Length: 168
Image (cartoon, rainbow, N blue to C red; front, side):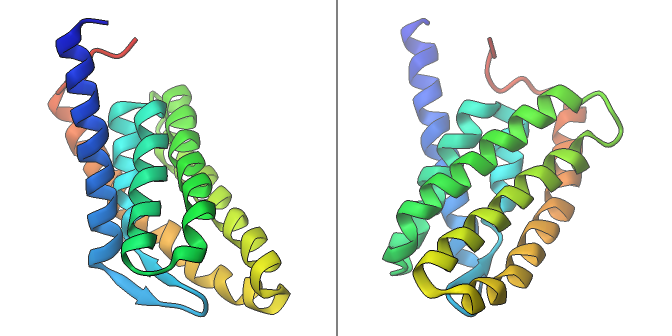
């Protein structure tokens, strides 16, 4: 990889992670153990536009940084893994189904389901069954709203034909 291409990739990693952090922190709706946010919107957009590597990095670092900034330190390690995998899954599924009418929907459902299940398992071990069940509704709403908002953004940007990076 050329040096200027590598630098551009590093800049995209940083900007994508920052966008996820900002979207996570700007809209925060308190829930039982944490907060519902719009960070997943940017995770989905980044994953669709830039691919699995960027989806993972932006989801992991951007979301974990938001937890640290918002003083939800206990969530940061789990968030790093859960949101990183969410971005990775969205990108992988979307890449396979992007030419299908339902590609965005399936990618979003699979990625959001991983997020919901990941936080359920984490909260089960940290807070117990009742608290884990109590957070499911907020996470379902977060995943659903994020997909509804991200889908038209992804479709609009894809229609422009912009190639942000020369993907291998």
